[in-house]
Length: 479
Ligand code: 4AD
Ligand code: MG
Image (cartoon, rainbow, N blue to C red; front, side, top):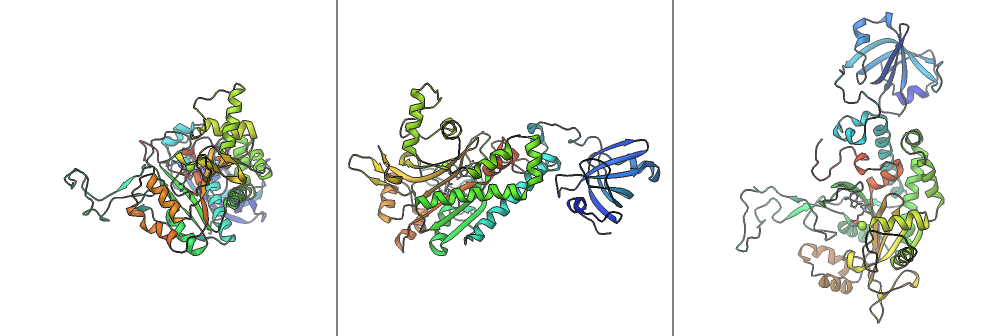
């Protein structure tokens, strides 16, 4: 008999008809010779109730219906007398597809997040992780749909690369060399000519540079794939392997980039509210009682558009009024998360798009703002900054901090080359990137959204390790 998914069985109103469901036992209880099984097959957060008469089944079969066991049930779909569910199944035949003994690690409810990470191979079977993973899927669909509907092309950028997009040097090397016996030159530098690619290669930290090649040909592209960072950041916001969405668009200016960032995030949040109601209701009840309110709030709010220099002024003002910060926030400092959180959660109480960052801690490819005679610069809406700034345009979110990092790109070959020289960057491996500025260069812009940070926001979860099935973090690559 054809199997019906629990999701569909729960919607079915053909009471009296015969139905087959398969899934895993969430719980079993019994009373007066009748047993009740809560069965879940992952298609929905909801379980279907199976009711059986103990006398109608072999004792041995009834004993083997334990938490975690996998069953196939054939029975009659009936209207349920119990509150909170429309239907249930009166079991006629029960087949045990897979037994589950009492060493099953998910016996008890209320296990800690830390414990569940140690059983990451099984935690998708819990209510919470089921909900998170279904939402994660839906967010991926939202992202592809958004870009497809807006005329962007899905552009596949390589995972193995010979260049460092962000120039931060925190890359994982890719090699087939025998590490015990490395070939070196006279200065002791490793020679890669006998390595698989004939040069030093790594896992990519971002698909942006290749994305720019796509945008300057197809007009508007996006990437959506894994990226890797070997930064030793043991925080609830960092993974060594995370998924990034990177749209890149020709002829987009700073204001339009901000419009895109805001519109895109709101689309994703709206999608979650429309497509993941059951799972969000569950998380709202069990994990975070203000979750849905917060998601709806983001849709209502207009994001603040704030030049970095103005942000520093607000932080300095707060300091003057007695607000304590652990880290310095003078003009030119990279903002710490306490500063971002102050601006987003205390000062504005809504998402902030920060722009026109000092050149000192941003990447080489960002568009340089017009310099003034006294060493300052003029940026967004004519705002004046005391030093050189670039059109880096990040989105800061409540409780998450930076969710998007983006920028307008420097399209002038001369200005870009001057910046590369200033940083003393080795561009040997990026000759192709520079060609975009030589052959029909055009204004363009783009951003990177950390997929897991979006999932953190949409689920209300606190730790990035809990919104990806198998997290990769320092000292942890299990599963
Ligand atoms: O700000 P980032 O480093 O920007 C770039 O890589 C640009 N090349 C993107 C672009 O313009 N196309 O990273 C972008 C986003 C961050 O805002 C953050 O959401 C996420 O990627 N991210 C991380 N997420 C999880 N773990 C990490 N270690 C992350 N590092 C960055
Ligand atoms: Mg960034």
